[in-house]
Length: 481
Image (cartoon, rainbow, N blue to C red):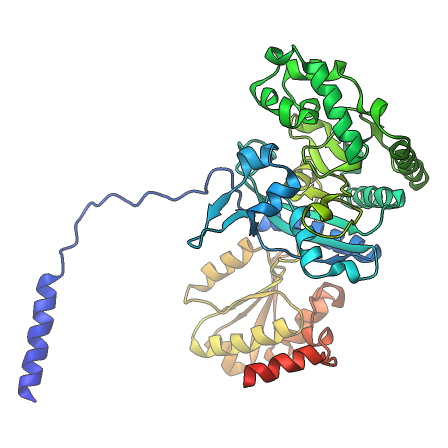
């Protein structure tokens, strides 16, 4: 036994000698920063974010949409085949990687392609048509960061698959407009609409554009010189001054689309007029993604310079086929959440913030802390946002913290109050306080706050036990075996 003790002490001494001495005056570690082009959503931003999500969910339910979420990462081919391999997104902005197995994956730069992939993969074509889906998700583009443009950005969007009626186009546009009205920014936005015709119309018009630009190549920016051969319609969307001048003089797409496409567009406009949605026809609006056909639209905010598109979308009748599905007409749109928040802040719009702390429980001594714990639990169960019973700071320090949190009321107790069955209730704004029986603390707080200011939610109210599907029962049996 003595030997074991001696060996233990020796081992301890040996380890101590090998421990390196603490080096004084070491430089502080470099402070880490966000990656370029990324953005933190701070609590004050989430107040806006929460309201936007609430509005989107409400309007989605009204119109029969159901929520879908797809992975942030897809097979790269999903985007190359849908967005177009000659677009800026694929050529310059796609975050892609190769797995150890050799698969090429990419972070999703937009939402529609992944949803169409899911529509095909999960056999949604057999569901009652149209299938109406919406999403609220992050997306990624390795683009040059600037005002209103981030490398990770959030969008909400709506997709309607399985119906070619122009009424779908009009209703999708109206849905976007209603959301902007709900968020009180509609007066700051201008709806731009256009038609780019059918796929055959686009192919014919691309040849007309190539003939028009022949001999003018040196007047184009470097990007547009590359687009002329593979995606000439993108030249109409360029923001370069020289390219803009040439685009204004170019043949108009509306002069080269089929009778059927014109009729579709005219019906969309007529329905928008009936719905009371104001719009401006913009013949130069073509959208930057290859999958669009017929109606295209964007909501512009004039004050945002180059990054003035808040929401955009259109019809994409051939995309499901392009990704391997059956012929399925479709229409949708997406909106940038960060850009909408910027618009709301620019309007000085205040949004509800339900994260405020209403009551602070201050205490001194172990017995007081135990009683404070009971009070905290009762208040939170009763729907009161409550903080406190933390640390061993002085009462002055605790009340100072309560003041910084902006609470309406503070409950104060120490060892003496616990023994006497009393507690101090302080009105922080008025600076007045009363001594009341300890048992009346929670009822008195509830009375002062009022039923309308309490926060109740019982998850069990939303959870019911339904009948299990046969395939689920089989799965459980297989897992148990």
